[in-house]
Image (cartoon, rainbow over all chains, first blue to last red; front, side, top):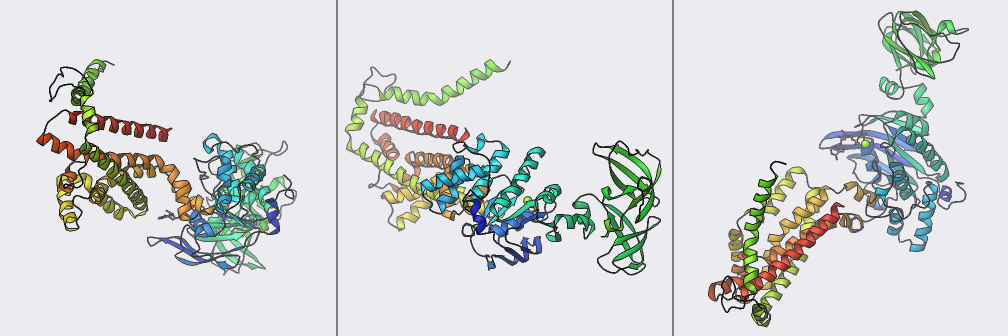
Length: 370
Length: 258
Ligand SMILES: Nc1ncnc2c1ncn2[C@@H]1O[C@H](COP(=O)(O)OP(=O)(O)O)[C@@H](O)[C@H]1O
Ligand SMILES: [Mg+2]
């Protein structure tokens, strides 16, 4: 749908709300679920809270929505603190984990619900419901009951209901969690489109890293109630700040060793019997222990490259799996460290045999200290 | 399958045992005899006419219906609110509060009745419909709390949160989302509240005095002083009425399960 045609889409002129979380904390009976989250979410941004189950994502969202009271810190929407404002006066759209559609109301009545609360008259309600259904590509479903819809359709209705009253902020808690992979992927794209159409701020919660990488402007990786790292998807993927982020967001090879010295922004270290270099955010003292991290698809077999500057490491192939678009190898370095290498498949690349000793090569820029 | 015939026999015996008194009373109520005899010499509507012609019986009937209706209103609202509140309490407090609310089910009726009698006699509530309504409400609230509680157990609290996030006030969310979804439990609770009050004798023995004689109380007095088949007619009508209510409750439950 053309975003310019719909009055709902026209709210983009009003833009999204900005959200700031300041040292936000929540304790349940003394146990910290959220332990000091600070985050500035810009107007119109698509921000994802990504983290494993139990990391405090839902609790954070519930505090923004007003269903949980923070134990400490502050939440401001458009610069005004909302702590103490009841949920129904926050004007925030919310899509719940299981959609939370009202089972006794039709699709139209579900979507009209927020309009009714705001005193919108019946005629206008019907028009807006129709628009909202068109926006989520579910036209003509007004008279159905939620139980007559598939999971994906219920999800769209929940989305329509959450945006029909033109909130400037939309919160979503694992909205695609219950759907199968294919449906999830198509809805991810629709969610992006909707975000672009509406221009409002999205705060999205998921534990699915691929989902986070696909949709977000920025991702806040949450672990044990704190933000482990915040940044654009590429930045997080290429420059994970610690081992947790490196392994939770995508797959990583870790090489541990000792620092030999520094060269402008790059650490030189002895790892797994080789001298390796990696991007270091700050200077490290010689002799200190260090872990370098590299993505499996950034490593290559040296003999397949015309010139391979950067890091080199000898390792023995212990497992070779052909997985269609790529070959996945498991290798053991001389010190026993296990490494994964993903090589794009082509008819001309030579398959490596188990037991073969190979030299791996990869750019220093793709190596980071974690 | 081998067990089927004995099971069938046993079930029939139990049902017969349960139904026999009712059948006997119904049969006697249609008797044409001037006193209680079985089997009746002939059938007629004589005792139904006697009931409808008696100002005392009719006054007691209307009083019982009125007291039961007021009890329904009071017990259903209080019980529903109590069930909602229980769901929000922390576990330990919930157990304690539930035990207190349900205690009229456990404490013997006569003990409750004596307690209520002592309290109410001091407040001048003996022989007053108000006293009966208050006492019956105590007895009926546990039924409402239990049936509404069962409905709430299947109610997803997130629906209420969804309503709030969409702009509903706490009361608006309750009225538009929670109440419609727990309505079957509320209605079943209301029916049980009605029957509890309408059928109640023990408390009525203490509280009716001479000014507020309920139907069960009048039946009791009648049995003690003058046995005539009118009581059989009243009993049959009461049973039919209660059965209708229970049938209604059953239909509601079916609809809730659908
Ligand atoms: N109402 C609650 N009472 C007690 N503990 C809670 C409550 N809600 C969440 N928690 C705890 O807080 C932590 C974070 O939960 P949650 O925010 O739901 O995590 P996530 O959504 O990231 O999976 C978990 O350890 C969870 O058990
Ligand atoms: Mg969660």
